[in-house]
Amino acid sequence: MARRKNSKKTFENVEVLDAGSKGKGIGRADDGRVLIIDQVVPGDIVDVTTYKKRKSYYQAKPHQFVKLSSKRTEPVCQHFGVCGGCKWQNMAYEHQLFYKEKEVLENIKRIGKVEIAKTHPILGSEKIYFYRNKMEFSFSNSRWLTEKEISSEVDITDKNALGFHIPGMWDKILNLEKCHLQGDPSNAIRNKVRDFATEHDLEFFNPRDKTGLLRTLMIRTSSTGEFMILIQFFKEQKEKRKLLLDYIIKEFPEVNSLLYVINGKGNDTIYDQEIFTYYGEDHIFEEMEGLKFKINAKSFYQTNSEQAYELYKIARSFASLTGEELVYDLYTGTGTIAQFVAKKAKHVVGIEAIPEAIEDAKSNAKLNGIENTSFFAGDMKKLFTSEFIAEHGQPDVIITDPPREGMHKDVVQQILNVKPKRIVYVSCNSATQARDLELMDEFYKVDESQAVDMFPQTHHVENVVCLSLRA
Image (cartoon, rainbow, N blue to C red; front, side):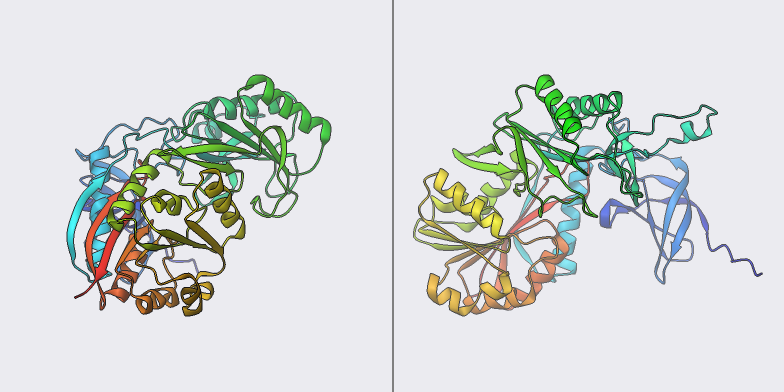
């Protein structure tokens, strides 16, 4: 039997020149191909081994660091390098901001081929750790073992874990001791729940065999100081369920909302599941500029509350509202932006595909006493039509905040048909934003652009642009 040829290559003294897609390092191989390198920082000089080859590039991992970049910093998290959550912890924050802004501007110019009249400096986050308001952790009875544990001769009996999936491994969970993404009491809740469940023989889930009791733990915290805990059980075992939930109340009596789900289906998403309230309310509150937003277990809300406020202020500023405008807020979610700009608009119409989100939007508007908003649920490309506009009015300003894949081409075309005076485009993916800007370039020019860092220690970045009709 013929042996398969080893296609791995090694390259020495490779300088990492840039940070590319998904935060990976960019270098150049001796044969001219681009090297996309894991776990490096621009400025590093490394010896690498390739693990994937394509026509114009290799993907590679470093096996030797010849020289470390001056842009490096010491990661604060003990799990860095194994956990895939904060891949840029080894890069000083000012350099993270530089490469995020660079990516946004290059995408707009290279993919979108458009000019920006005015670019504002990227807005960094005041908090660079403990900034997330929502975290989800998975239980597993087959935790990820460290190389040290594997190489030791000790018989490992404690296989329980509560933490994150190892990147690329759906069935292996990294057991977290301290995570730097969500503030107190997140770490205490996770660790105490894990220890109590282990001590009382509550079965952790096995994703391969689909057995066990404890499936996931979700923790939501809010800027108002409230917090929510949701435990997802794989099956109903009333005595064991009550044992754990009562323990949580005893240890964290300040919890505002303690919920649970019984989910025996193949995946652990809760959006099609019934949520049971065990203690407290079925929601917590977020607050922004005097507005209150009711957040339940299924609600979408920006996961960095403080930066969401900054992002929305930029969007409102770019909209240049005088109080006389009819505003359409496309992909409105739970109507947060719509309500945030409502006091400066004549009326705001919000459109969103998820009916439950629209119900939340209506509920929150009522809670805040906002009467100049209307919310509608439906597929954007099917609902946002000429008939809809004829019924609800010609928008002066359109604010759009689509998902990562950007706007459907039919939605872009409809915006061009409507021709609002201004468009404010909020995006979590500057590549698809740039694609959509190119489609609008014949009729709209980009007046302003500002990147906003919502997720320090990662490569993710939001961007807001303001467009106006060409003369």
